[in-house]
Structure formats: C-alpha cells, structure tokens
Image (cartoon, rainbow, N blue to C red; front, side, top):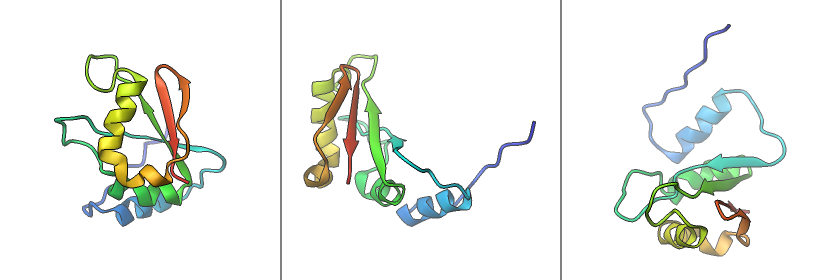
Length: 111
C-alpha cells in the first residue's frame, strides 16, 4: 500500500486553499459537495464564509451540512438553518433555495 500524501501550507488564506487543491492534480467532475462546520452560537472555531467562498466557487461546490446528534442550535433543520444564517448571511442573497433532503440534512448551493 502506498503512503498517503500530506499537503501543508503556512499561508492561512483562501488563495492557499485553492493552491492546495490544485497541488493534488485532480479535477472533481460533476456535483461537488463541500462539507464544513457552519458555525454555532458561542463557538469561534470554524472557517468563515469569506475564507471558504473562493475554493467552493472554484470547484463549483455545494455546501453540505448535517444536523448534530447533541442538543443545541444545530440539532433540528430549522434551528440549524437559523444558526447558519447568523454566520453565512453575506451569502444569503446568493444561496439557492434550501434543499431539505431529510430532517437531518440540508444542502445549499452558492451558485
């Protein structure tokens, strides 16, 4: 079995994420899901929309987020959507209609 490649950058910037993607030398055809932590009230440990937007646009991706199994403001689709809009509101006008594929899943498109 071959060893996994590890990509690293000291530059924490949106453009660096695109360069890391390009360094892999792959293209993602078709629909691309970008799973991320959309934020939670009281939590500052997540990547903000302005950081992620360039790479999501670059791969023509769709944000995919799942509700949590623990109590909080992301354990139902309705509360999760409301929480997401607190942090992702700059994209509000660019988000296509919310697709609720189940009570436990929501998908957003930034195109």
